[in-house]
Length: 454
Image (cartoon, rainbow, N blue to C red):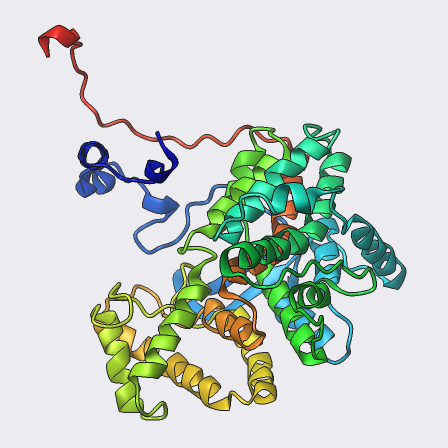
C-alpha cells in the first residue's frame, strides 16, 4: 500500500463497513425486554451504581417524602464544597490548582509547609527526558493535540525503569510526574504542529519553577511569555473546576476499569485521554465556541430576545450551525437546575470580558443562558430540568485568553489528570477485582458450513 492510499476508504471497505454495521445493530426493544441499562443509565438518566469513591461527589437532587426533587447542583472534592474552595482562593493572589491536587490525592488540605514541599516536588518533576521534545514531540506532529498527548504519555513508559511497578509509592511518583508534565507535553505538541503545518515560528520556552501550573501554561504558550494577573487567576479557576467530577464520568470510569487490570500507569492515563478526547466528553467546549461564532454572524442584533430565540429554535430543529439539533453547552447528564461549575465560573468570566472589552459577547452568552433552557423545555420532553454546563463558558474563557482551539481539550486533560491520578490510586488501594460488566448474548446458535458449500 503506497502512502497516498493509506487513508483512502475504498468501495470494498464501504461494502464491508455496511455489512459490519448491519451485523452490529441490535433491536432497541430488546434493551427494554431484558432491562439493560444503555450507557449504564436507567430511563431517567440516572447512572447505574458501579462502585464507591471517596474522592468527589456530584449532587443534583434530594429525596423529599420518597420523591426525588431536582436541586441546584453542588460539587464536592473530598467532602469540601468546591464553591467554598474557590471562595478561599478568590480574595488573595495565590493559585489553587496545586493545593486542590494535594487535597484530591491525600484527602487533606495542606498547611503552608506541606504546600511549599508539594510545589517544590511538582516543580522538580516538570522536566522532560533529554531530547524528548526533539525525538518524540517534533516527530510526526498531529493536528489533534489529544493524540499527541496520548502518544507522548505512552512513550514516557520507555523512559521509566519502574514502568510496570503498580505499588502505591511508585504509582504516586508516576502520577506526580505526569501532573507536572502534562502542560509541557500539550503545549510543545501544539507548537510543533503550528510550526510544521502552519509555518509559524517555533517557541519552546522552559517552565519556571516559581510559577504555578496556570502561570506556566501561559508562559510556555505565548511567544513573549506575558500574561495579566487576572488571566492567570481565571485559568487557575478553570483548572480547579475541571480537575475532578465524580467517579461516574466517562474518563474517570475508564481510569478505574483499566487500572483494575493492573496494567501500567501510562497505559491507564492514555486510555483516559482517549475517553476525554471524544466530543461527548471533553470536546464539547469547542462546539460551543464554534456555535457562538456562527450565531454572532447570523444574528443582526445580539440584544434582540426574539431574534436570539428564533435562532436557538432553529438550532433545535437542526436548521442552523451543524444541523445536529443541539444547543451546545446546555444540559448535563446529572445536573438539572444548575451546574455549580458554570455558576462559579460566570462571575470570573464577567471580569475577564470587561478586561478584554468583550462585554457585548458576554451579554450574548448570558442571554442564551437564560433563553435556551426555556426553549428546550418547550420543544423537548425533559425528565429533569435543563441548564447550562461548564462547557458553556469555558470555551469563551479560552477564546478570551487567546488559547488556540487545538488546546481546549488538552487544557481539560491538564486539569483532569489530578482526578484521574486520585482514582487510579483509589482503585489500587482497594485491591478490587478486575472490572468486568455482563453483556447478554442475543445471537442464535448456527451450524457451521464448510467454505466450499457456502
